[in-house]
Length: 569
Image (cartoon, rainbow, N blue to C red; front, side, top):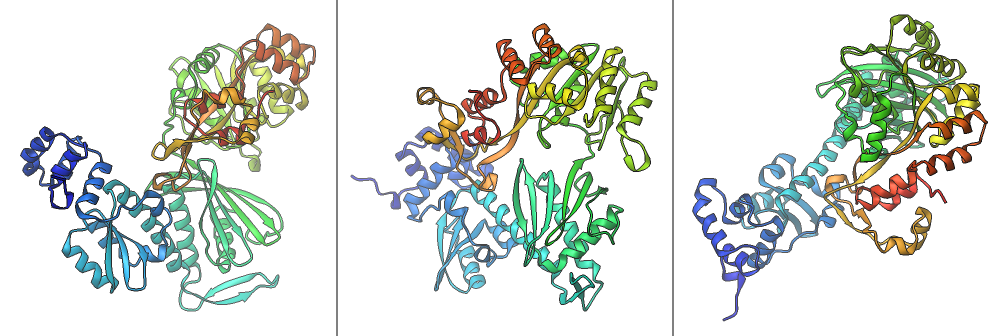
């Protein structure tokens, strides 16, 4: 006799398709009253089946279609918001597609007549249910209704504007005819900052376009567009930001920099503001710095075991210089503050001079340079020497004066940590010499140079196999033979990662230990190619090889490797 799932119970179907055993079903039937759940949900709670198993069983039993994750990534906001958020969240439903006479609705319980009838009244159309897993629906609801909330808040903030005027320079000025003109701008500014903090944004870009203002957030190192308020609000956003950052409101032709300290319900942040003029108007870039406790450790930054051993060895030396190099946003400050946290103890007097102070470290003296009042890096560092330091962190070597002071600190028995903008570790050494430091001083003081970058990590929820093209393999410096032994991965994109394929970042590192061979090359004035070859011969692992290792371990994709590094060949 053939098995007909439409006339079978859910437990029988799960046993029939091999998702559960009869003993597991029997046990779940006994425990089901304690949980007040349906049998399928009880089996899930006990860990005997997966959500996909239950979905498949329901599909066989009820003949409802299962909606795919890819389909849920491409929903139209206008369709989703036809169901109010409170109803959608409480009853576990989301509108998927609006047809002329019906609406397709994804549900976890398509047999619930009460919910179906309520949906018919809300939508004023027939309802066609499709199946969706509980966890996928939760993520989808959060993603779309968050976007709807943000859009609604923007509309509420700017909805009062109904008159457009121009100033003497023909710049548009918006005037609210019915209420305080500043209120909508304040609401919008607060909304931008609040959403940025919620999404762990590092930088906020507010830039004028022809017809509107574009707001973008840098999340995990990549910019994402989040909202497009009308261009009429742009001048108000600029003025409000200038007022809060104590900048000159009347100055529109020159760049200005300032900062804002904010205390929000989520956390306290220090906002570094940069305003620069463009052909379409002024552009704002705000860097958000967390004023909370520093939560990073060396073991969580992405160091491979051999890199961590080398770094730990040098940060515990009594004197000399350790330089971390890389572009802006490559995690240099994070690595150095994690190093200070590692070696901090009651016997050491640790002092930092930074601009700005990005992380607050308990028990460490931190000085913030302020050129407006004459507290430059140079003047601050000269005063530090009279504070009896053991370890000094210099936020950045910017010029010969700063470099000279750092060298002298290291040669007089202090351990110095600092950063420098350079492409890689060997280039950092030649950059120091270019600044004006004599090679014999550079060679005598340097202990370790570490170049670093931040790679985006593949989202674990949508990690899939990937087959790179010949062009990608060539750009990554991987031969066809090597590729055969690599299990390439990529992020297909899902609701968990906002369809980017990536979630979080990890560091890659290039550590150049200044031993006798390297020191001699520096003394002799050798170029960076000679220094690089000698360092590789002494065991230095390049940034590119470090990135390849992350890729081989399935942490990142070949696209990220190509984007941030290049082959040493």
